[in-house]
Image 1: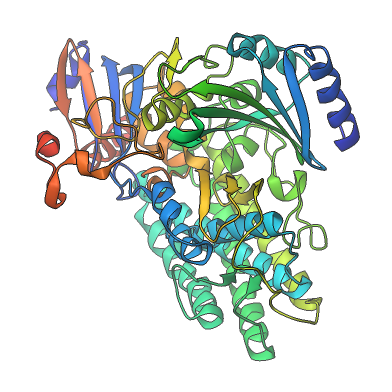
Image 2: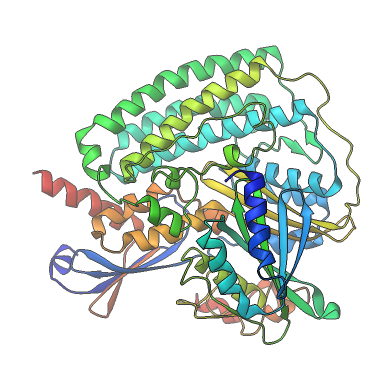
Length: 165
Length: 398
């Protein structure tokens, strides 16, 4: 598929979900679709896969901060120069998303990182233990959140809880 | 240790964290039944430095210096992805001469990286002669990079808006002479990796990943291309000067370890070719475009082809001089999943080469192996596993 065809196919798929998504064009080769309902993620991804539209390049976690009161998970699918990004809006407490790893195995490390850095529960993740964070990292502390306080790790750069590793 | 392994028992071998192939930490846990790997998981984090968090309290310029230090081997491609992303946010185009120089340095970086990898992968197979020769020859490109940028590692060639280095005639001649030498040597490596019987025994037909598997497992870079996946960001979504100085896609259909060698060696020939074209047609003009200190609000995505595969940057600006968010997705994390799945069903002796085959960069991901058999876990150092692989094959030949 060339660029025009890719953009058209992606638009058509998203049109089919128009009552459940809001679509924008932040750049000539980028399409962003914000989902109303996080449960639509898997079926929408399946729709993209069926049309062989792109591969999952990355999953970005985004914290809009305690004042704005929400986070986002961005799923980026690349096809040639075109990038289709599915955006899920998430609460800062109790954020839950379904795993893509059953249909896209490569999603697993991306989802593990999203979970540990932002405090998002990814339902159905096979190995939900930490990918990057060390053993002994305090529960409920999510480093990439805007209100992360390094002080909770202990003073003087000496982290007693992490001596175990 | 050998008698334990010969018993058909299940045990776990930890490999790492002071690890595996590249003298960088990573932690693999393999479950082994007799000789066959039946399960594998990965844990990283041993060299994690919190860079994505760090840039949230540094300005756009300081962040450039931080991000180009994510990786020593592929520093320039990180700086390039970042600079292109910030320029996109700001609506600024770096001048053509700067983009061409960015591509020039990126291809020189690919040369040093692939030569480094050839040596390391050869070392994994116990082929230390090839390791020594390739690293000796690699000094040629290291000298070129030092002559151009002042540094062998972390070239710091990029600025936001352009580059800080230029190429004069003397440097141009030195580069061309170096490339001629390296091209002759590379022909020799191609010959070695495709005809040396001992080497082929550890690579031909080993670690096969089909095209379907590569696509499903999200493999990128030469690892994916060796399985016939036609994916290369320089070709799919040209950036910097790649639209003016394109490269050809290099693929193989064999999908085995030998193919991963051959693809990287053939990519070297493409590097030499395109660098000569760039030097012949280097656009005249400025090296930088003016960049504002405060970058307009918005989001940008920057995708580039690092030596190991697609490097993905997501950048968000809040209109100030400090980035709101920068997400860095490096190629090795994609390929690690493929290794985990691939290792299952293979024999333990093949694990070092299978891992080495993806050219893992742990700095990029953060940046040791446990082998479980019969519920008992044994800690092996990478050196032990590597030796085990070499000795297993040596025994079979005797």
